[in-house]
Image 1 (cartoon, rainbow, N blue to C red):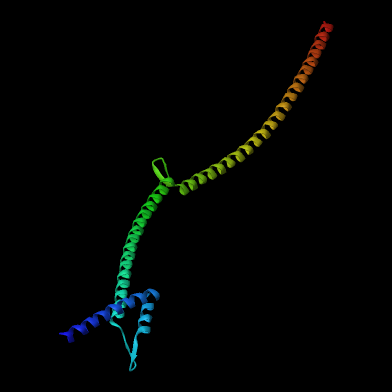
Image 2 (image 1 turned 180 degrees about the horizontal axis):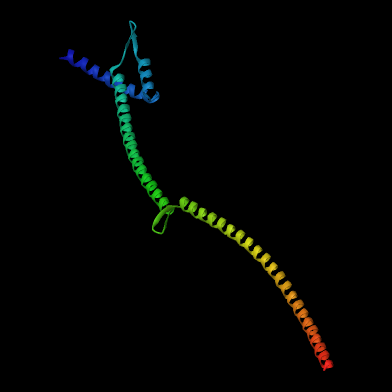
Length: 202
């Protein structure tokens, strides 16, 4: 029994001592995976070109690897969840933006739309029609003014001619009246002379 018990106790004590030594040494080295790997290699002995690795150090390294992988996986899952939430937010924001753009387009269409006599026109079309009508009416007014000015000038010319003819006619009437009176006087003188001549012959 002593042959089996003593080696077991010695192996157990060696394992505990080695684990404590590894734990103490690990606190003095780089805690990263690469640091622990380099530390394990530096503490391993070589035999015929091969490295004799302490199982306790290998187990510790493997535990660190699993912890790191678990941490990375947890962070990866958290990142995926965050990305998924952000993608959902982006989708919602895009839907809101599209809705607002649609509302804005509808509002702009209503703002740019004018109802006239029951017909709907865009502002650009309405402005074009209005300015076309203004230009046409302006040209028509200019044409009327020019024609009116021409007629007014013609009327003034004819009025001047009429006044000249009226003045000439009035002067002619005065002369004719004077001539008629003169002829009447001459006729009366001739009558008086004739009556006087008749009275002498008697």
